[in-house]
Length: 165
Ligand code: IDP
Ligand code: MG
Image (cartoon, rainbow, N blue to C red; front, side):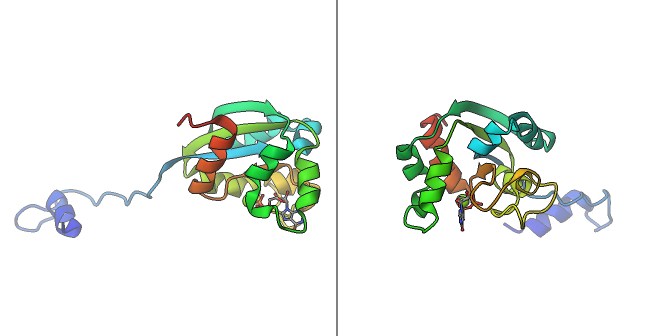
């Protein structure tokens, strides 16, 4: 299908004269879900409300939410790509150190938008105004988790909320 020709028939008459203003080009958007965790340091520092507001103020929606003390079994599944890494023992100790808040967040381009609001893994390198830049401690203790892709989001949502989608 020739989209250009089709667009022209909407905006021009048979003589090729313009009959309508060009429509503004719409940016492609997609409604997505992503898994967000407020990690134990965020809960302990009583940052839950402020962190949730960062997402809500950006127009994202909290679709599911639960308090969960993540145990070793869940941590091994959730962080499966990191289990062999040298930092894993520290990460495991941290993520299982107290209750977390686990959420499904929904909205247009939610995966990338949430990662932007969260900031770099290392809070020292994260921009001010991002969640990690404002509240993170170090490269391990960095307040929040956000899925890194739509496929990770689907996998992670299923770990914490089952196959409800
Ligand atoms: P991400 O959370 O920004 O996606 P990942 O590389 O997926 O970062 O790492 C998962 C988590 O493991 C991080 O959020 C952080 O808590 C911890 N982590 C990552 N890299 C390091 C490191 O080099 N040293 C210590 N901890 C790390
Ligand atoms: Mg990651």
